[in-house]
Image (cartoon, rainbow, N blue to C red):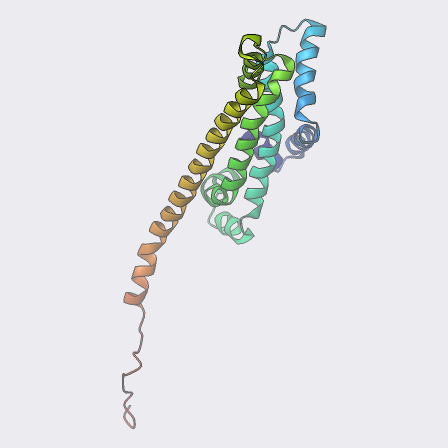
Length: 215
C-alpha cells in the first residue's frame, strides 16, 4: 500500500497524483482505532461478514500504509536534484530514474523511519483486543481473569510486555544489520575509484627538487 501510493504521489499525471494525495492524507489523519471500529461495526451493521481479524488488518494497512507512503515519498524527494537531472540527461525515463537512481539512495535514508513505523505497527496489533480479535493481549486478558489462579493480571501482562520488547528488539537489530550492510556496500562500490585516483594523478612529493635555470 505504501509503495503503490508513494509512486502515485510522485506521478506527473494530476489525475493519479491528486486522488493518491487525498487517500494518504485522509487515512494519516484518522486514528487507527476508528478505522478498526469502522470495519468491524460496519460489517456487523451491513452484514459484510468481515471477521475481527480483517477489521484489524484493514485498519493497520490503511493507517500504517499511508504513513509509509509519505515516508517513501519524502525519501525520494530528499535525494539531491542533481542525481535526477543527470539521469534524465543521459536519456533515462522516469521509472528508470526512480528505480535505478533515486530508490537505492533513498532506502538508506528511509530505513530508520521504516523500521520505526514497523515497530509501531507491531505494537498497534494489541488494539485488536478491543474488537474481540483473538490476539496476544486478548488471550492474556482471558488468562488473567482465571479465578483459580487468583486473577494473575499483572504477571500475565508482564510476560506480554516482555514478548513485545523482544519482538521490537529483533526488528531494531534487523534495522541495524541492514544499515551496516548498506554502508559496506557503498564503501565497496567506491573503493575501486578511490584506489585508481593516486595512480592516474601526477603528484609531486615535498622533497622533490625543482631544477632551476633549465627549461
